[in-house]
Image (cartoon, rainbow over all chains, first blue to last red; front, side):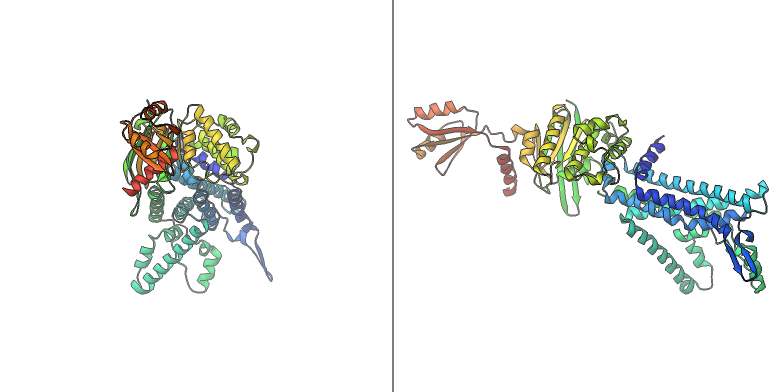
Length: 280
Length: 301
């Protein structure tokens, strides 16, 4: 009941905002463009190459493939998340919300609930889209195969929630949309620099750097969904013809899920602490 | 009488600056209170603390005798702080609907309140198209949506043109006449004097006075007198037991009263002493003079 009220409040704020509506709509439209991959055809001289025939829409591989591709589009929703926080600062409506009787805890909850709902909606959309694509193109349509490897969808969901929680925190911290998005980008660069220093200076020729970097928020989110392209039969056989076998672990790891969920809790908690400490 | 808000020893420090210094006062139902003080005296910071947007450094406050948490209590309060803050992309009605959702009241009163502030014909215009005066009036409508136990207004006429100031004051008067408790922060003396029954005067975060508007100065007013022989007049006045202090400036003698006294009484007294007055008037200090007097005292102290 309480959660419903908070969601209603946030939904009211978003539904009249034209930019938020446009971004959310274009996000879901772009998501459905994944289906267009099916129609990609190459004509290399006499060789005809159709992407849909390469097995990317085969169950259960399609769950992995679509989750991976779709996870890039989350940047669209990230803009919505960041601006729904920073606009509250720039319009000074955050202050008015609190004066009107919303508690700081309720404010953060309403934002995080919105993050959850958007992530769930996106996952559900992806599930339906993949199901339809799979049923149209997959070589295997046994129920037991269709619904195997579903953990990629869970990884997708956790990936979105974690990333949006990070966006929310950035918005709270920086208060300006553009700078908050810049902050996320700089954070990503810093994670890579830190990884680079560890890998090539501190712990050369060992796995320690990768282990530590696995705890970085963005790195951990990335680890949830490993690229699926090299899993494709065509790519595998091409690699073995060139004499190198691709050995990669493509599975979703429980520890990565746990790390990202841990960061989600930290980001939400820090957002709350930040708001609590601030004089508005 | 029921206490709506009780503030005790409330203090706010911004670094080394003490914006509000051990402020205590309480607000009873049905009165119209003014917080009076020059710019930067800590009025807005005080309101910010009781409204949950500024963290207090020490001290305490309690709403409605402390039966509810602050944010629950705020649902029964209507408040406007400084600038009107709304979502620019929403219309007046959409903004008020959101406030209803936050306060948990039904939307039935939106039209009524918009009518009260004279914005009914602009109800479907976007907030960003409003003039400052209209924004301020929308803020008042918003603060009234829950028929609040107390209405808090911070500098409600700041930055408005005379027409706007007049409209806002009319609205406040209407609300006060309806029996709503009001807390009005202002640096404008006449604003407080015209609207308020009680006043809290603060300067540099410290309370100088709190009580009824007419009780600011315990004095009983003063006489201004003239006669052909002012030296003798002063001598006679100084001999009177009910007169505290006599001074002369530009031929006008001022006698400050220690006890209440009517002009007839002093006139007869002086006449008996063999002097006739050419000018006599009894006056009370205006709030402005009293305010300046109060702030001056602490300045030199």
